[in-house]
Image (cartoon, rainbow, N blue to C red; front, side, top):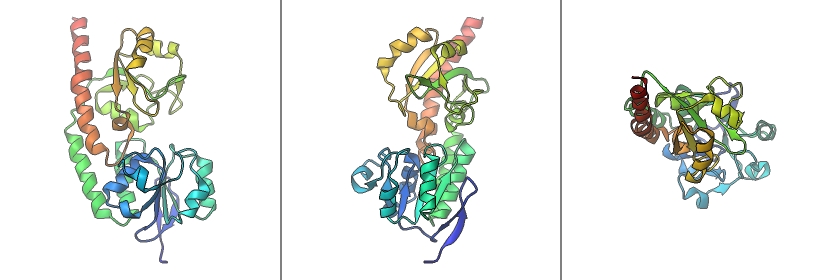
Length: 277
């Protein structure tokens, strides 16, 4: 088989066919993107968290989770491309795949621009560069509809409970927050996904606390707990996929962020202005 050498977002060189025919995706948002690239027939393996499109859970081989995927099962699928992610997948597990001689292409998405870069690179790797370019143009058009305010309100974005966990500035979520007029109160933390105490949350004094629907399934039943910790803050239950999924999901995400900006961020900013008079 003729192979070509491509570079992933980590800078590693990977040998793949001109158009891979047996793809395993270890990243839920990228699974959705591969589908939108028209590669459904070539996708042979996914994780149990790859829930979009829904029928994949019945039609594709599930290789485990994003952290605890099954190396031997993946090998049995004879993939000619495995798509992974620097932060979503375990480094040691990815090394096992590489050491087995399997072609692992690793993405590294930390903001809007690196998300677009991933889309273009992966489209080229999969032999459908024109489709990828078209989707990127559509994402860029969608981005223009989001009106980013010049001033931001202080916001805490929670991704986990017991212990509470949040995000710092080196995350895709942080950059999506900023686009919607949110100042991440934990942006300066050293850890990308830091654990925080109730005292940390109180000291940060956010005007808005976002409870993400994933990876921890926050719901309205958690409002009472947060109201006692940060009684001054407005609580908002958010669709976590719209803040954390990169790829073609961004086609929907910017409309969602514009809704959050209008219905949540701007009313809080208006209340601020009234109180300051």
